[in-house]
Length: 123
Image (cartoon, rainbow, N blue to C red; front, side, top):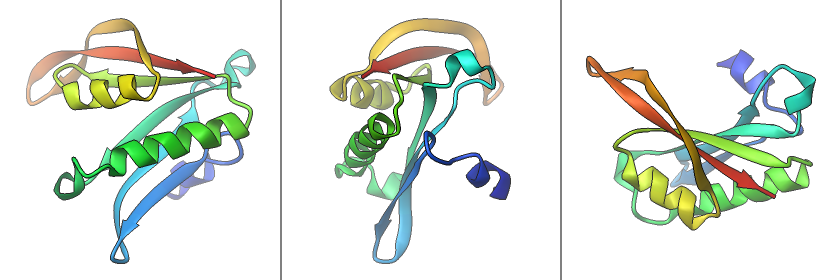
């Protein structure tokens, strides 16, 4: 975990949502690629504990991480969403992301090959 946190600096912020002194969710912008040509692109990760979903925490986290990415000089954010996660697709669309493609059968969950949807936000 320490290595993951150490890789999140300047252009790769992490935001944590807290309720009653407990972490209930987080959003992070990770380096998209080690190649310099992609230095102004990041990959978004967003997580909210199930108990707290549907209460606006994900929306707030996403809006704040997008804002932080813009302030850090990013040009683009990419998200990879496993097929079937319509809630994630919807929250991305509501925050200005659009579908740009799909990786076929690259995910493996519960013994099943799954497609991964690619979504992008451009500042």
